[in-house]
Image (cartoon, rainbow, N blue to C red):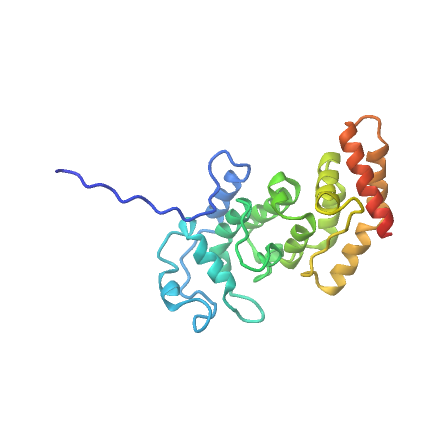
Length: 253
């Protein structure tokens, strides 16, 4: 016969398909972070990542890097100060795609997903690269995709990645009524009993944990939630959720 059956392409896992809210941004991430493949995985291959996986790590195109390769890389020890920018830049678009797909790229917790390099520092990146990272951070924090994780876990992920905490908390206060109430009600009320509980991840650094805890019982957040609860122009179910969240804040304060 004059043709050969083409082997089916293996599914790398955690891909963002066309039509997904993050699809165009992820495509842009692959474009602006494109560059030569690194020469080294920059993590431990003695007792962490297998030498066989390390030898095969750069064979697939980055967009087709298997999810298990990425999670194995995150599970392998690296230098205390993090990894070199070359390997981090190479892996960033695939890491962002995995996060956008609602999957954690590591075995430990979503909070550490961007912490191996100073990701949230615009001085580290070109203007095009930073525009992608900044848009990803804002869209991920604000959209329903981020609800795969708690709001607090997501805030911690970006803070450990180098973003400024004050700006992140400001973005929370600026959320539309249904978003800020929906996210806090989901995390503090729906996941717990009627009394409620303010969840904070153990991954926060000490000073940041104090700042975040203060924010969760602050007048600014309490007043915002109370205004929503008392509004005559919002749906009854949203007002009820706002009232539940307000009660949790009051008890914590």
